[in-house]
Length: 84
Image (cartoon, rainbow, N blue to C red; front, side):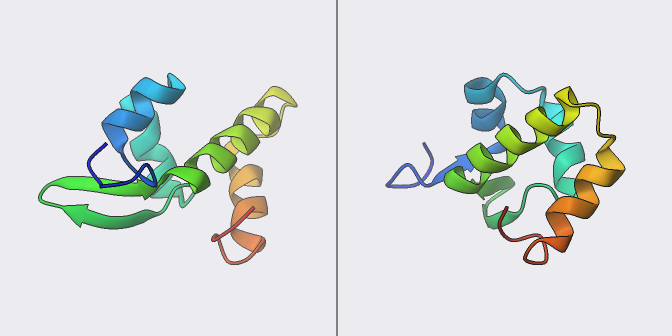
């Protein structure tokens, strides 16, 4: 991990840990599914707990047949994109 504790993950670490393609992480970030907590140099750091919850929710909803635009509405309408 790049931080002293396990709360921060880089996009590359997320990709390896959750087996999600790196471009998918970028797309989810652009859509507002994942929030960048801070930057270290050119690395984006994400909250590991949020990532785990969000990726789980996204996978569940995609498997149920929801399109990303509706998933985005659900995530962003629930706490203005901060917590689902």
